[in-house]
Image (cartoon, rainbow, N blue to C red; front, side, top):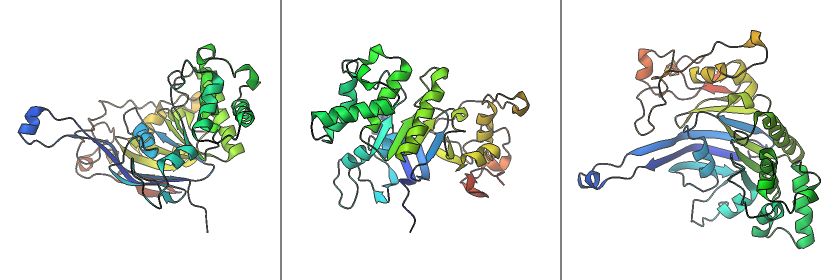
Length: 335
Ligand code: SF4
């Protein structure tokens, strides 16, 4: 029997009702709803990286927050190694609790400046998860595990960092501390939410290489959230492109990059810089703004901006269809 995926998300919806004015309530107007995540499904195998790519506001971060219980799903299922995850504030038998989940799933946030307590030393920051989860038998073990995690994150020798404060480190070093604090609990899944977007271009590759090395040495799975299709090529095994709360294209990274089927994926790819000018694609600039998620367009939700839109696109909503090689796309023209 094959092993269960580390993470499985099935038909996940997360809608946020808007606050109503008194007048709306008196008129018994229904509250408007923001469709942040609108029927998303994917799975992630052990030791693999799945990149979720899309513009800001497409629902990527809401997915991450829902996965670890910071938001309650409107509907849908989240399974960790085949076991369903309990809902917020509920103790449900036969489901993995949020406390257990938060030990086995860790997050690396976008902003290393914000995610570190400026008054805590690096030792305090990296040891805190071990203390909270009671995972070190004594002070010596605590020290040993903190040092090992810092060194694995590339902060060597660890002794030089233990008593320093976040403001004494560079942006790249701070993100390494965030990664060390995430890895100290030996998680099975890492949710990396735009982990390099706040860093200088020169150190982005270093941090991605570090995550890749940890994936190989620890066998962890990574859900990599990014708005930049240029960072996924050498890093992610699978790629899912999101637009307005939905996955519009998904498949093995090499296959999707070589043979993009959705016009939105093609537009994102067209602006990725390539070193070889002969391989440069014609730039596709999308017109208009992303539609309001409170008032989604009828038919294909990409049609107001799609350079290939036809009359038919305004009539029928598009769902993912197989296009071969484990590749799916949600477009009438997908082959
Ligand atoms: Fe564009 Fe039509 Fe395909 Fe939607 S279905 S992406 S509007 S061509």
